[in-house]
Image (tube, rainbow, N blue to C red):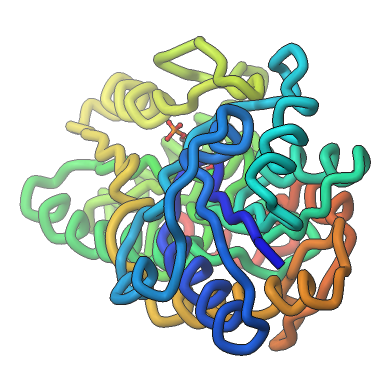
Length: 341
Ligand code: F6P
């Protein structure tokens, strides 16, 4: 059996751990051969490959990014893209594909499976917004990075009696903001799921200053004010039609300055949250996902995605993982409001 492996969408810590687990088990237990596809779906679309064997995966467990490269190429939008992928897989002798990605990459995998391409999915994203899995790897690392940043921002905010706004990633889900905000002791956490009331945010900021501490406001890049629209610096769309988020942090800091007369600054954590070495939790999850993905291939159970349920790794239909965005439930948000202000 010859198995193709690709990583698509935004990179995230733990991708290399999946690749390593897939290859190690596939070679040693099943005697499979592997072929790496470069840069997400661009690889099978354009026949861009790289060798993938035991030698290539040595030492990559703790490395961030992906040795295969990634892109947001959407082959469904390319004229004849699916046929081109099928032809390339056939000419390279690829019997099955493992696609490691988020909503977009696995959405393409779902469509390809419907068109008879044998594919197994592995969910990844720092955003943790894929339904059907309790957690995606990459999320824990992003939360730890953001949480450490918030710890650091507390001390400088207090020294200068400033409000500090921390803008974190997560797209249209507030998971990173919620978890980093809780662990970092933020005075307000603003998430896309609950449009915020600026008057209320100002009252939290004011009461925090009155208690002689400096407020830290964690805002998700997709958060938006009540009765307002998404605030973004860049209005261009990517190949999957997503707007590039970021801008709400600066908007909020300006509003805080204007309304309170206190100095407010913004730290946009951006891609720092995606880079570098994965946490132990993400290495373990990614490794278990990889081992289960190659088992699914061995069982010829295609059109599935591996998923974490409690402490078990299970297989679910690909469509179940990508159909609905997993957002923060209101109850999770309500329980942390105690700490606001
Ligand atoms: O989906 C992961 C993510 O990091 C989002 O949190 C963010 O909105 C987006 O990717 C950024 O994408 P890019 O790296 O293409 O700008």
